[in-house]
Structure formats: structure tokens, C-alpha cells
Image 1 (cartoon, one colour):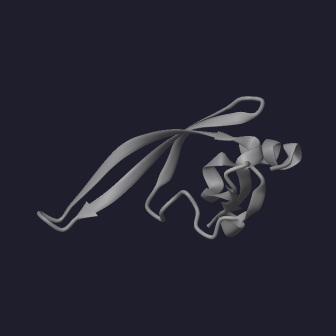
Image 2: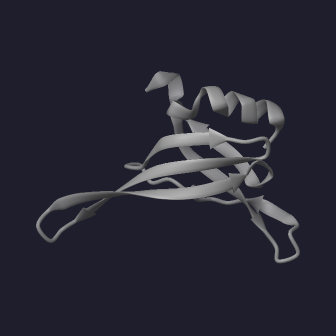
Length: 95
């Protein structure tokens, strides 16, 4: 991810729909962008702490359990390096 796009994402974190990473070989060379993203449609980013070359994300993941028909949400904490992020998908026109 370029520095310009990185700075744009900082201002638009609330509009984030999904995050795609690069696929890497064992030796670290980039193959291509991954087809699936890190977030499911029900997930949301609760907190993002940006550093110079990484971001710490708190993601609220909601899962539906058929037994008892309940939604359960829990937070997942991940750190992503800027250079390993292929692209960010944003909401279109604020929707």
C-alpha cells in the first residue's frame, strides 16, 4: 500500500468494508492480491491505531449460532504491516 493511500485510509477508517492482503511465497516475494478479504459483512472495525509502517486493528466479529438463535460478538486484535496490504474496499457514496 502506498503512503498516499495509507494516509487516505486513516481519514476513511469508518468507511472500510474490507481489507485485502498480498499473497506471499515462502521467500517473501509477492505473488498477487488475495481474492478474499479479512472482514465478513457483519464485521466492523472498532478501533484502528496507525503507526508509521503498521496498523493495530480491533475488529468486532459477529457470529450467528443456530442453537438458540443467538448472535455472539467478540473482538479480534490484529496488526497489519502497510506493505502487506494490497487494497482497502470502501463504502460507495457513503452507503
